[in-house]
Amino acid sequence: MRKSIFIVLSVFLLLFGCNDSDKVANEVEKLPLDLKIARFDREFAAAAPGDLPKLRKDYPYLFPAPDSVWVAKMQDSLQRELFQEVGNTFRSFEVEGQDLLLFFKYVRYYFPEVEIPKIITVTNDVDYNNRIILADSLLFIGLDNYLGPEHRYYGGFQRYITKILDRRFLTGDVASAFAKKVVPRPRDRTFLARMVYFGKELYLKDRLMPGFDDAVKMGYTKEEMQWAMANEEPIWRNFIENEYLYSTDNKLNPRFLDPAPFSKFGLELDVESPGRLGRYMGWQIVRSFMENNDVELKQMLTMPAEELFKKSNYKPRN
Picture 1: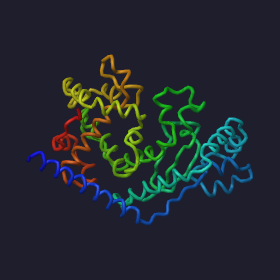
Picture 2: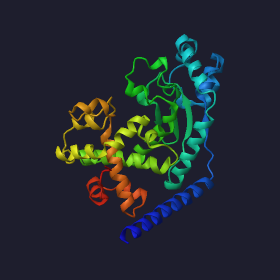
Picture 3: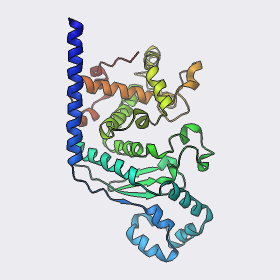
Picture 4: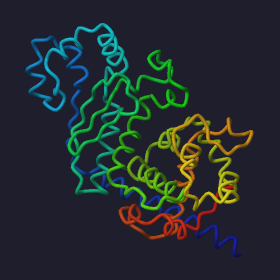
């Protein structure tokens, strides 16, 4: 009898959650939003020195250097090749444009006070650490950082870097840049606080990118995501047994939070694991909290990590 009641209750909660998600999706779809996207990368690639005054007028924030610097860039053979490669990969920006339009509609829904930026696509000499720059009213996207993991331009980079230099991660990178604007940095120096900080960023992607796979939100391959999910319980047990949660040891950052080829438990299986598993665990803690508490998104983002963790009733999947 109890089992039957539990099944009925589970189905009810599932349907209620789906209906709530559908309601939000319908409201978001109706929101008016004129997202402006400028393909500066294409305009500059097609320009001649005589076009610089117009480009400077249209994009004053991109022209702090004298014209001679830009003329040299126009005439540089390597730069011309870079423009060509980007142009070949991004002949159309329509798919990304639609994804970003929906993303910023969700931003407007949850954060109506936020100014929606104008999007400018550029090249930045494959500076993957700055592939997305979000200012107050401008969003710069370095398209030369999204040519695909096997592109020859990325031959000198490690695999854990090249695998995310793909256009399918572009919207997620924009979401990460936005999260830095709305998720307060933790005041607490514990490993738990840092895990939850990144967990909040990833949960924000759940809300702002509901149609995307978890692997894309995390910046993982499908296989890496499956590994993290399959090993959630032993990962959590390792963190507990080693008393990491309330540790302030900064060495835990490169082991479990920073981009890396793999996570570092000090075990033989390390090389099988994806990097940044501490972020994944923080994500599951935040998800558990939101499932078990009736709290608005913005309120959750400002909550102290320890309070959030205690109220999450987090239990790792077996």
